[in-house]
Length: 229
Image 1: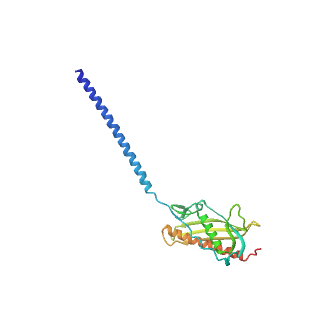
Image 2: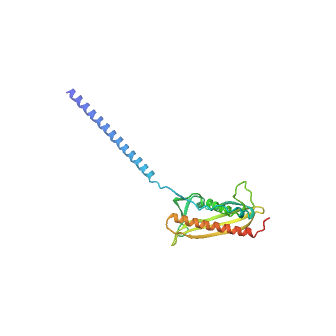
Image 3: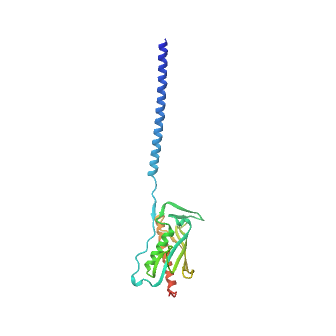
């Protein structure tokens, strides 16, 4: 009788042990499945990440011929454009009705608009061949005149007609007298000939080229009427 009871106790203990082992195995299996699901979800999310697209403004062409160079015996220095932080970053800016503004997440400029415009104007003035030298302003730079400015708008404007607005104001200071001798204000809304971001970029590019062309012509007119010793 005692042997039968001992055998029953042993059988019950082995049964409970088997149940515990099965419970541990089931829990481990659930953990493995959950971990695998997390890994798959993470990899799927990474695979679906949308790539950014970058755009740039058109760079002016080659410099003028040697016969056209150094019409004015002056060295121009181009200072940085001041602007809102929106135009000192590389996101393309848009605005809707009222004062609402935002930026595209995946549509970007290759450089901030403030830097691109300075580069376009620098290349444009150098290519004109009308000045002894044109360079960007640095701590060790020496020039006769310094061009400063502020960029107010460089954005897409949505409405009944999609537009690309560029607004910039520039002033020329004579280093010898520290006085402002010339100013130019440019603001223009260029129609966008499409609905996609590429059409907006193309319109902003046309507008920027037009604006910098006006600046170049206005500077040329100023120096043509000024007595330079």
